[in-house]
Amino acid sequence: MTLEVNGTELYYEVRGTGSPLLLLHGNGEDHSVFDPLAARLAAHFTVYGVDSRNHGRSARTGDISYEAMAGDVSAFVAALGLDRPAVVGFSDGAIIALMAQLEEPGLFSRMVLMGLNLSPADFVPEVLEELKRMYEDNPDPLFGLMLTQPDIAPGRLAGVGVPVLVVGAANDMFRQEVFIDIAAALPDSRLLIVDGHDHGSYILGNDMMYGPVVEFLNE
Image (cartoon, rainbow, N blue to C red; front, side):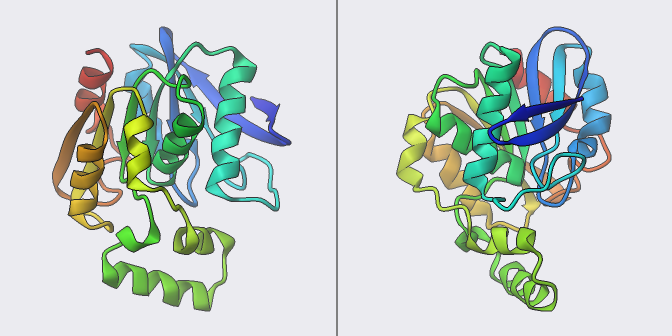
């Protein structure tokens, strides 16, 4: 299905029944990265898998900023009349969910933020250098997005106002203390570091986060 919001067109798929739950994917991906997890979550929630602008089957636009994508999510929730859905965001999707909640504190009821960073400085130094080399070889705007954004002041996290599960991997592309500091700065948070995994391996192509996500969302 498609929906026109915030000056662009978003593609999304819906499955399941129950209270609403948004799934927001990472950079260069689409909603299908959540398919194994979404299939199980659909037993508990009405699951909305959304393709961000310039991703998947959503429209291509000149503005690919996180701010614009956060605005898309807020407009999507409003257009469908969703009443304070929960949200699971992975990587860029976590950034987008956080920024949307900061701009509209009543937007979500609970948040699962996986692989979240607040700044490009949060990358492991070796990963940041590799991203810069990749961007030099292929100046894809999506690479540029990760190198210049986001810029979220840690002090703003005190205004999130809803329970948050912060998830990072033991071998993430972001420094592990980033996740620890984010969880500490949130007023109501839980922290889960997934042992033996890298930035995407605990979410891409599997449902291993089903248990922790359902437990948290049903608290």
